[in-house]
Length: 391
Image (tube, rainbow, N blue to C red):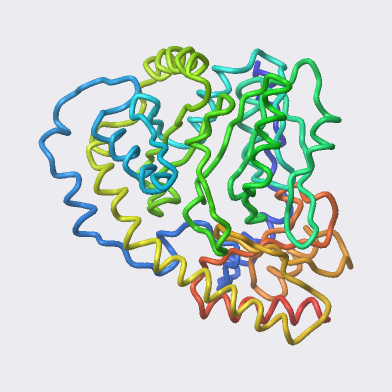
């Protein structure tokens, strides 16, 4: 009765079962996997945010396939601040609003791929790609990120997995959960790789603004060398995941961009899913990043310092280098599979962490920790984790 593309394992995994069992006992779980910024004790300007929805414009239905021009101009202004120093700007007519980056991926997948064609995706990385690809009949082919005093793209391995059915490459900038940016030294290689093989670039930049090191970060929204689709949104930029506004920016050679935009506009016009009230509020909601990002980054830096301080007292585990984003990767002794370790932590220490296999780490020995957890909870949870690892 059902399509093969939805033939997923729907049974609850053992890790989730363990979490629910502990919560059912009434135990307080210290959440070192927190991903919802609205529930970690940070402050929002509620007055400004709510006032943004008071315009009478929201009573008018003005269907624009790419999204309201006022919202797209606000997104363009955001990029002007990011890349104005090198003279590149993002044309609002090259922006398509979506309800989420997930919807943005679906637009781009429908634009670029016939059923069964292949997309290169980084490994380790965020597990959502598998579901998005299944729903669009796209075949994912992983390419490894390698770690040597920091994460790097492995171009020789990317060459090896290419086939005549490969149509594009996904880059997450910075990657989740490794926190690694594409470095300026890799950008030229990446563009040359795509040019040589006729591939499009699909770039996820939701964590772009949260850099922890001075690396000269850049946005792919200004990339002109190959056809590039850059995805981002309010979920991370302004830490407002409930507002459901994201976008796709198309850049690259002008003839390819024009052809892509003509098709994307038809796709967007077919769905028209971004609602008018939130589109009208986009200029205000984007402006919120300027007051919210500093306090979130203060939290991230404080927790990173706490992590390094506690790790300094032992030799068994180490933090891998993180350049940006909200997460840290902890390399731990391999005494059991990562999932068993995470289950043991939640059952015996009431601490929630993510096992590395959730993100397709190639082997056991990795835990992923959120850096946006409230500082006192993070410190106590980490103490319990290291205590458990030492038993």
